[in-house]
Image 1 (cartoon, helix red, strand yellow):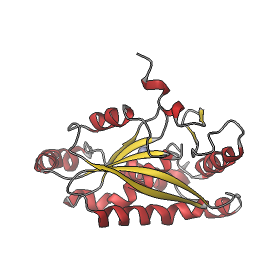
Image 2 (cartoon, helix red, strand yellow):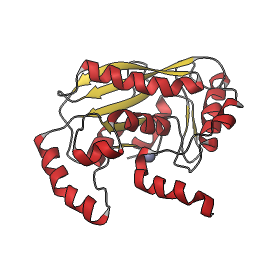
Image 3 (tube, rainbow, N blue to C red):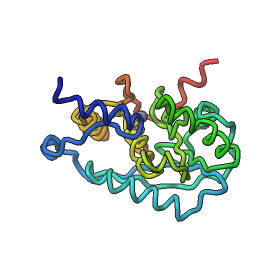
Image 4 (cartoon, protein in one colour):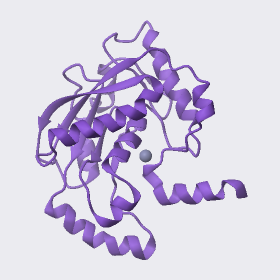
Length: 231
Ligand SMILES: [Zn+2]
């Protein structure tokens, strides 16, 4: 246990920026199959540029290449934020169907004066109690197909701990069904299992499947909406 202590401390510090520690040897022993692309629909706020979007995806794709995967961004729309809180954004994303043959939906959140004020207000709390109120990004846990990241931030404290690129990489793992773990083995196996689903007969051949963090297999685009049509 003592051996794990430094990892636990780092994990607590980095919270939702570290999905787990890489285990290179284990990863290299796993076969991730053929190169596969999946399509990620992007909604972005007006202050996020095309160049920034491209840079984010190229950082994510560098990580994804470990698994012979590639995320193809498809710009869906430039929109104003549907609400101030992360939960507002997630709720909005969950109400949208996956169109344009998209497999995942990602919202790139910008930085407004309201955000800056909020950052200043929460800075004291962060320093004082070590609380991090600002959430850098999140993926809904029902289908693991929709999520958002703060795509633009340059605030002092944030940059010490995280960046938009590392946030996208982190949330990107959630979009593949991974949860948080101390070491990555479980996540590698999840990604391998998701790729194995590509040969599943009942899969929509045009949809990149997902296994949710709770283990549910989602093989068609329609299934990603099932939970929201209940009412
Ligand atoms: Zn996370």
